[in-house]
Image (tube, rainbow, N blue to C red; front, side, top):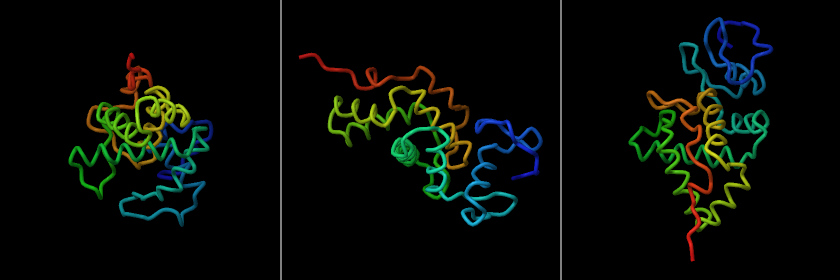
Length: 168
């Protein structure tokens, strides 16, 4: 998309060796067509968020609702951190973990329901969330907080640690 370099053979997490743009952005541009993009100037394009989520669902092999759930939690965590609503949400791993816990409890009713609901979405470990976050960052829909990387989700939580069972 940026320089015309042939990206065949690279995965969605790679960057162009010529211009350093994310390969995922070029792929999304190619599969969605230019009419799905809005040019902002200086070679920057704004993607259609729904089209990106649909494409990521196929690329990541996960539930569309899993991507929607994670994206919703990112937006909410970003708002609570005081970020502007018209800028791409800023992702902080610990804030996102806390928001996933809060939103899952509110949405599914209790810890048991949250474990079942998130398991049904395929979000059983923090690495599952990190994979979606990495794709959202590479697509340009999310911005990583300074010093944060998707690897910050490695071994951060499991459903059992996020929603421990209470003894009777």
